Length: 372
Image 1 (cartoon, one colour):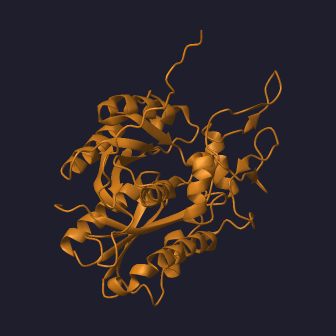
Image 2 (cartoon, rainbow, N blue to C red):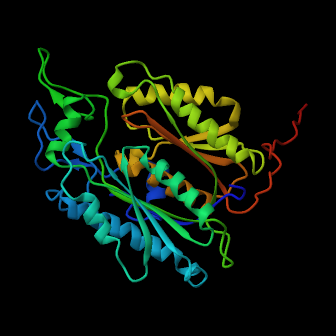
Image 3 (cartoon, helix red, strand yellow):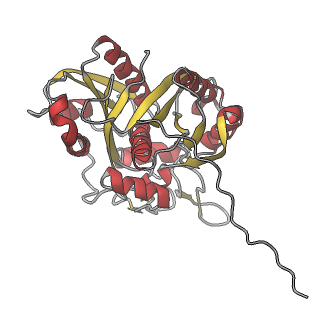
């Protein structure tokens, strides 16, 4: 597409950041509100830590729908200053939900979330379901971007929710060695797993348009977006060298270069405690080094939110857009999305308006004086 789509607004919620403003602060300060699972016990008889809202024992489809509705309500509030300009825009919705075969998922998640999205303010012309894992949000973003080329006057919303905290879901992670802190009895006593995920729950949404409305420039520009396949998946038991992740990132960066110099100053990664994913990120960052600015910074939102699985990519996009709004910079933000399977994704976000490069300010030093 010739013009970079505009991210009009975004929403994000998880236990340590109940709205996007607090979520941004939690990520930047690495604030995590963790508790013990109310039911599940690992092999050592201990309850693992999770990132969960209160009323922890009801992890049914209604809980997923409530989180999704909360994200939509936040998004509506964020869009109110532009609502008159967007009133006539057709509404298109992409719902990111977990794979049906993912263990421990309640029945009817997609249907309950779809019901929760019905509201007079949101007369959806089309609702599309995208099922997958951590990188599924990038897949949905690609589809939304393509739809805006066909219907440039529309508003596209990508929304995802995650609440995979039922006992069966944690057992699935535990059996794969992916549950952080899960203990197992051994000859030398109980030892907790130092790696793996802290399961979390939350929801996020981003609203996009082909061009910013007359009421304002929006939050950020989507300069590039791409997916790729990774040959070394979690199940393959082979070291992952970041081939697929780097390929997706390079494609997204190349798209961004069509809109000007693409210098990456902020990199958002879905690192979540897995050695497999840490290796992948390290190799991918090395491959992408020529595109990174000298003082590039990295953030890992899962340190604050817990692992948001299928909602992670949308949550990270929402936080990146909010960062561009509140702290605009001349460099861009690269959002990376890995997964348990083969799909990898990446997106490049830029400021909603041109930010000039500022001259370097060197530390002031008083002239040396000599005493005799």
